[in-house]
Image (cartoon, rainbow, N blue to C red):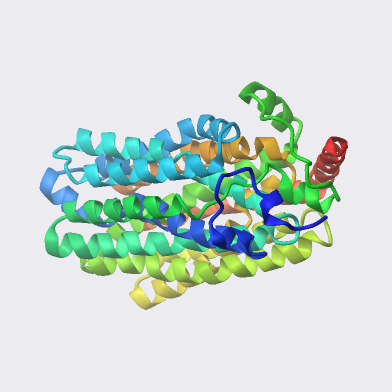
Length: 444
């Protein structure tokens, strides 16, 4: 099969010059990296500002938790519908409109004057961001097949870590010197500028291109038309590997949201750090080590995937199981240096898991349903997992301590590891073979 970019990509009047490069599939990952960076920076800014919001508006821990949950609940509820829409429209358009919308909403958050207004803007941010990951993961999966999918998605995943650091540190720094409203305005403007630039850089690929290429399909081969949510549910119900991966993602997202929403406050109150230093310490060590763990996990997963069907899931299981003790350590530590060690090691294993969140699922899902799959995973992960975490931890913290509340979150990671082990032992081989048989049936 030849690799003529003019034939590989979806029809377009004028391709940017960079699209003619044989390495364009990696340029796509690099281009989307900046969108992923802002996707997480914009949602993270508010958590470093909790102390300022508590002081200005007199918010309780549960009310602060509502700001994290408002985003997560709306994001989760709308994710499957956004994913299904992504499977029916150009992924490029979905990415651009999502980026521009959430950037405008981020700017508007700085205008809030009450808890109800803050909750509204956080919910709106969740709605506007639902299309990005389904569209981005679907697009990357059509440029990267079995041999490079985990590395590509792991590289994109590093944008999440850098964005979280930037949102946490810069949000706190700007709030410390200029007030909490300015951080939202600055990050919002950055998103609008980026969106205008991406209009010329992204090229829409044919759906299923990478998988069909690996099976030896000709240039004209393409995946079937997208399916309805009802049809999708029937397919997923008979693909148990995806159900197990969704369960693990839900539990992991619960723990991750504990870190994102409450660690800055934990550091501010327990160790008397400034807003900027609390926001930086809560994010920089775990996110930087995750940046090492994600490419490492991607490389390990691509290597093991060549040897057995559950290779990507095996790397995920190792990441979750080995990170659990360090979550407990974070909650019980008595010094900042000890906490930094725990966050760093936790981040390394977390990155190994994160690199394969969607790559593992898309190994067993048909191309025309991949956006919907990512949407449903986000629904389960954010609605049930992340959506409950801020309020649950706030509730436990009010009745015991924030240290104890953070520590008990580790139980979720152990349970998630068991779900992944079940997939490796009993379901993934059959689901991979069935997908290959389906794809071969589309080759004329």
